[in-house]
Length: 252
Image (cartoon, rainbow, N blue to C red; front, top):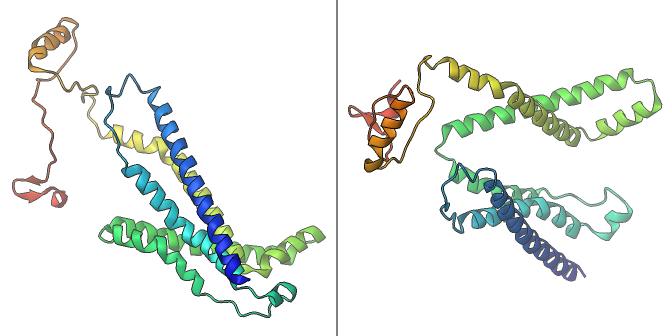
C-alpha cells in the first residue's frame, strides 16, 4: 500500500541521514586533525577546543539540504499512480512539492537579511545564470539546424526536447566553470595589486605576545644582528569602531 511505501522510504532516508552524518563528522574531524600536522610549528599548542557548534551546524545544514533534495523526487514517486507508470502523461503533475525548496532558503534569508553585499552577489549570479541558460538553449537550437551526422542530430534533438531542464544544466555547468576560471585568473592579481599599494619599506615581519621581561633581551638581539626594526608598541585585543566619534564604516 501507499502508506507502507511512505513508512519504508522514511525509514530508509532516516538510516541514510544518520549514517551519513556519523561518517561525515568522523571524516571531518579526521581531516581537521590531519591539517594540524603540517601547521603544528605555526599554531599554538594546545589549540582551543572548537566545541560542538560545528557538528550541530553540519548536521542541521545536511538536514535542510536533504529535505528538498530527497523530498521532491520521493513525493513525486509516492504520488505517481500505477497508470502513470504504464502510460506516461495521464497524471497531472503537482508543483506544490517544489515548495520544499524554501526549507533551506528561508533560514538563509533570515541569516543574511541585512547583508546587502550578499544580496547583490546572489542577484548577479542569478541574472548571469539566466543569461547563460538562455544562451545555451539558443546555441543548441542553432546547432541543430546545421547538424549533418545522425548521432549529432539525435543528441541535439534530445537536448531541445526538454529546454528548461537542459538550460538549467547548461547554466549550472557554465557558471561553475566561469567561477573556477575567475578564481584561477585573479588568484595572483589580487595579491600583486595589494603589494603595489604598500610602501617599499613597509614592515613584513611582526612579533607579538612578548612578555615585558623578555622585551629588552629580544630588542637587544635584533640590534646585535643589524635587523631594522620599529619602536616596540604595546598590543591589546580590540576592534576599531570609531575614529574621532565617526563610525569607521563611514570613513573613506
